[in-house]
Length: 74
Image (cartoon, rainbow, N blue to C red):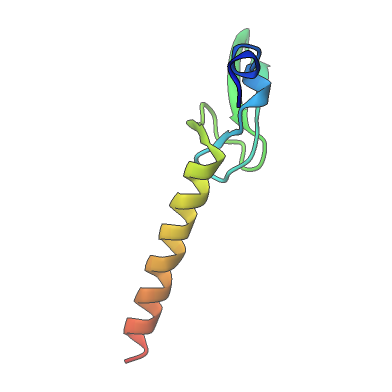
């Protein structure tokens, strides 16, 4: 990415996803309050992370699950 592209990047250009399930967030008005909510699981105020971070987190999770399952079969 060159410098001109970097300067013109907006929030919509980043690949942010929710840390709970890797989906987009949506902003809603609830009782006169603006609330960010995960589109998939309806969790309020989700932590937003880069998509590659979510992918790495899930890769680690599945690796641990596989190791635990393999250990239980012994």
